Length: 99
Figure (cartoon, rainbow, N blue to C red):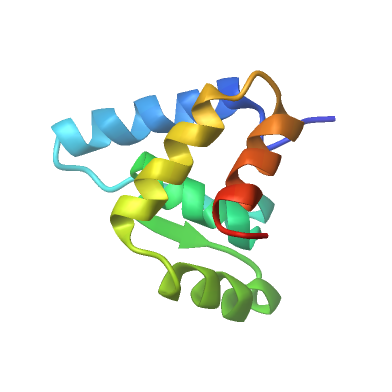
């Protein structure tokens, strides 16, 4: 099973977002990945310009994003990318925001 916190997957998202930014194109993430409040912070920091999720996830993701700056999201993204495993990426980000 795929773990959305896998640093290699996050690196792929970062590369895609950078390519979109360079070409003036938006890059969105949808589904369960975007609906995880903690991961939404990382995706925003990686450069995702939109997040699409199940309606049940919107309030929690909105609250998570409202509590952080873009600069903080970018720092969290770097923590996740630097982690050697998905578990450690999630743990590093959660610890950084006090969770």
